[in-house]
Figure 1 (cartoon, rainbow, N blue to C red):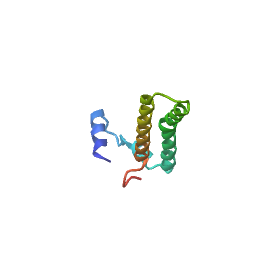
Figure 2 (cartoon, one colour):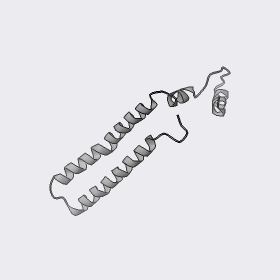
Figure 3 (cartoon, helix red, strand yellow):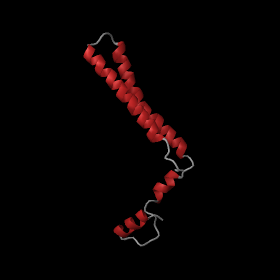
Figure 4 (cartoon, one colour):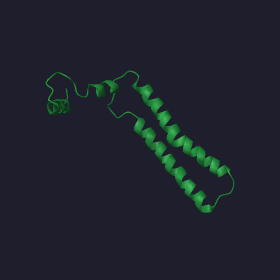
Length: 98
């Protein structure tokens, strides 16, 4: 049991052998954790990256726009690409993690 478990049990007034963060350890040691993380990464990339980029493609294909809006949309595309990189990096398991 970790020190954090003891502190939470002490603050909650619990004297049982209950592991306060047992659910957290259980979900990290789940046999399907890798597939869950991959699925969640695909969902996050779709919602936060693919859909915004699709909207930008529609905007770009819609005909000539003002120079400032096109420039702003390019900046938005770069920001979305940066977000995608962060989503993938965050989805990777930490070193030493199960």
